[in-house]
Length: 244
Image (cartoon, rainbow, N blue to C red; front, side, top):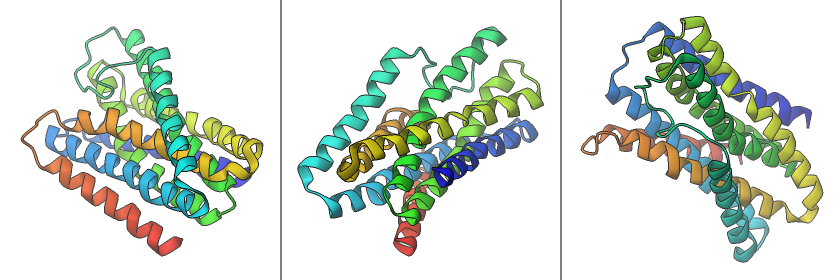
């Protein structure tokens, strides 16, 4: 539990790094922004498909893993339907009043970070600390562009640099809470660890597919987001190979 909390807390703080980047470099080009979102999507996809689904399939049958994957995706889908949030999630052109913008952004990013924290908690509780470290590192990597994506619209809405950084950092603090839930879930299901791993994978893959990839494709002809996605996927796949 302590390891999961610490790792998820540090991963959540990585959003503040991205927030600091946009506060210091406010005129970030759309191309770089989309490339970083593509990288974030690649990291999420690899964390789900390689780091989480691989061990789950080695421990149990396809039916259990498929059920967990579907449940994870369904969980995020239902959360999205239940919680009001911004569409598109990371649009840099927000004209709503400052207070409303902040509240909507908080709801959007709290929702977005829940599956990530859940994945970290489940990974540590599965009995393989190296798996937990891989997933936490992957979440931290993709949280940096995500923090940038949080701070950008807040700066556009008139927030000061310190407030934009603070909001970006705070958005990642849902992850330790979700990590605790992930550890608790594994303790409850006991022998169904592969199901829990697949559930976390389904949640992460759904977030990448539903939120990050579409948002990175605001310029459909651009190839940089796809290259960023491949690089992010490869980076986590190599880390998984080296550490597991």
